[in-house]
Image (cartoon, rainbow, N blue to C red; front, top):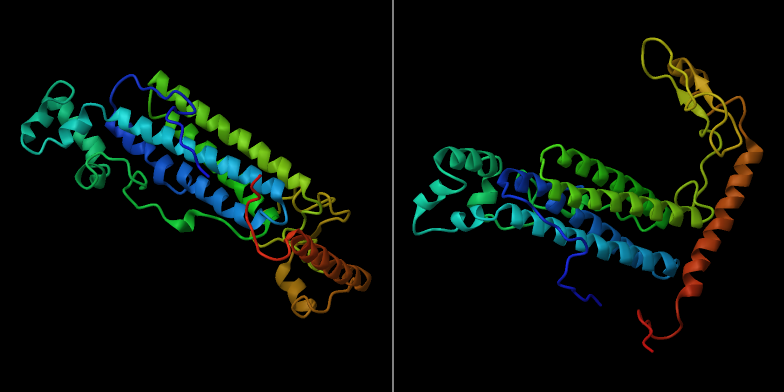
Length: 310
């Protein structure tokens, strides 16, 4: 059950109208890395987590709800940035009034050119209203959402989503010198960092969580690093030494074409890893049972009921 509190989570303010930045800020309203995308992503992920991970369901719903509150902050800021201009855009009876917006013709030309012609839909179709579109007027799309039905996969997607959103706020700060807007963007950016750490802690709380999902990786193909580019060889911790957390070393394949030919397309490796393969198969069966039982045991008998009312 949602309950709307009319006060914003953060007291968003602006010092002066800025239609150009209002248009840029639409990116965080209806863009692929914006608040609506984050809210819908965590909201949809939560349903699949309800039974096997009720604690993570609670977390996802809380963060999704906070993202909706951030969407409200962004929308409110956009409207405040259109103060004065928004009213003139709606003055259908006297088009000349737009000429006086922010002190005369030169200011008008600058504002309308930057704000409206940068995104014609903002002024022509929506009349300055905030709709779920990005800064180019492209409508919000459900394909922005990553929800895969496996919580370890979803949480990794969320870490990436929060990282991208933080970066967008950093870039947006470069396009305004309004101290009040900087305060708002700093708050929103920092909450992305907070959410990142929450998702990271939740992922670490699920064990085992690697590899993602249920099935183990085939031990015959986990260690190879293929040198698939011409020029000087570059070595680093991603292709030499011990693989992080795996207890085995990387195998650097300097000549991938020769290696694939010699191994008949990776089907006749020198070390067939029979013992590891059997161990992986055993792990697959065991983990599959555990994951399946985790869900089945949490489901109530009889009539299904989402909430338990006191």
